[in-house]
Image 1 (cartoon, helix red, strand yellow):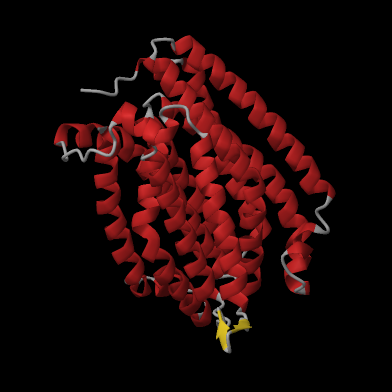
Image 2 (cartoon, rainbow, N blue to C red; image 1 turned 30 degrees about the vertical axis):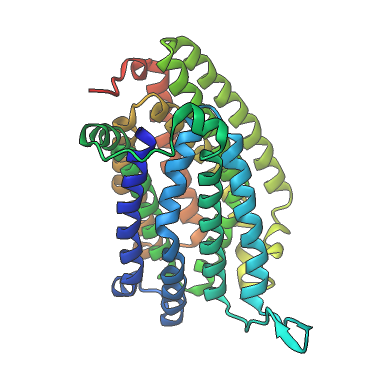
Length: 371
């Protein structure tokens, strides 16, 4: 029943996001990035937002599986969608002359560049959502949950989902909005710092994605054990999650520092960008650990339904600390991008500490979800 309410929310919000993507050209000038960067950005956003509904639908269906501790199906669906995305990226970004068969040329496409990248991701997202839907309608689940039977919207259930989920959504929006402002400020320093910063973000995916998996596990297990009336067991799993996250983050930080003079060469051969590479790699090694603690803490607390606290901490530190500090370092002090990333590390450290203290206090064990 709640999965269907999530689907209705996903359809509604997805259409809003699609509309916002189409009209995003109206706000891109605010970024003050070079005109050619803004034009390419709009091309990507316009075609990427075509799959906004399916992105939201994916999250709703992932919740159905993860809430039942079935994290394998979302993984399988993600692999299918991303594998297709990779194939389409090579095909559409760079173009292909196709092959001859029966006197005709098949599958030939011109090089689309950024547009091809967006189309590839949108198609991969659509396939990911359809794979999740196919598994949700498998005979075993159809028999047990009757999910194939359409449920009508129920405002009380939707209200519960919004009350618990909206602060979590706002937390993500605030976090992404903070990094948007970060990118805007870095962009005012020029194309080279902006490109170097974007490579740093890509580098951080090696930390973010595994820790996101741990965060999902922590959130699912916390919610399940609290639902079973065993908050102490939930706390035990939370502590183990912190340990695993710390081991991975510290190990990755050591690797990044050791290869700091070479790792940016994977992404570019521009000498100006490479000159910033070693310094940004060290900053990324530090940042990813603090970001990991913040992310894991947020996952545990959100699994318990303690979403309002995480939102408030993120709001205060992102918009009261991170954004003003970035502006001060980049715009006011005419600083460099490396200093900005160290400032980001300090702000994310503060977030992680405050959320960890909330976990240690145990107040999250008594949160009421249903009303």
